[in-house]
Length: 407
Image: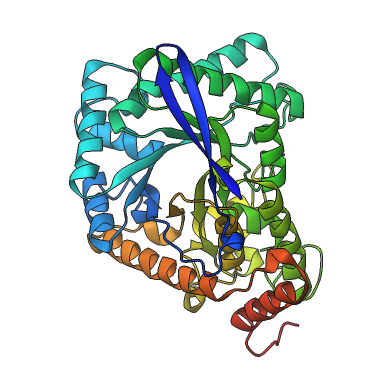
């Protein structure tokens, strides 16, 4: 069983209650009832596309949740004559517009799931810089109330200079303090608990789900949880876009690469309760010529060009997609996770002008999600090991390489 934690804010403080939630593996015949979401940047780049038409496209395609990117909120401010470089300044005008945006999303039959991303937050050594950085997170809290969302999340720090550390104790302490700050805000205004999510970024030091979960677990705050992004999981634990085969980071055969991945995902199912996953993002990626994604700047992370311009919606094999996204999705759902399955895709196609871009990507994304859900429903519970694991591996190999030409 997993456990669902519920927060009640009273004058006496924040009270937590826990109720049992069955994991997918506890159910005889699981049905996938998770609602569906999409990131604002996955509907079109903010430079070319205003936010409202993108939201309308998402609603028309049937999404229930919107993942609001900072760049899109800043552009929305500028669309309304307000300074985009002051997006978290709690002026009356900014807060009114934030509530207007939240109301617009609701009028379209959707909700704002979260704001993101916080970057280079945790592990800062200098006490004054650390305090200033954590306080920047708190500046979002009034806007979260105006948007009517409870979640903000941060990517693991990618700084490698001596001013930061990935030390577990330091990172966990920072996450715990952020959780306490969010809880104090919720207690002070009597609203729902605010939550802090932590995501392992594939080119950060803490770049795996397990390293991120370790920090969340050590933070030991019920309102600090894990963000799982299928792309970032697969970019580290399966893919090698600089190899022409697309995988082979550790092993040369597709089957063995997937076997290693399923072992890691089995550990996720065994160790992470579903209610400790605060948000699940998914996306595929394109198998490309390694030469076109090789960074020219030595300071650019090796995975960044691929991540920024070649992600795809789930199971878009006709466009070059080759990632076993269904395995990550199945594992996340097997924990008992009940939140949205949300798309986070970056691609050069999103930077193109044209009114058709938001609609086309919203529809592609929804088609990808439907294919993903269908694929997950057919997978055996590989996290239990034995024949189930091997059957799942064989099924995914067959989907990705029906002729087994790469084996």
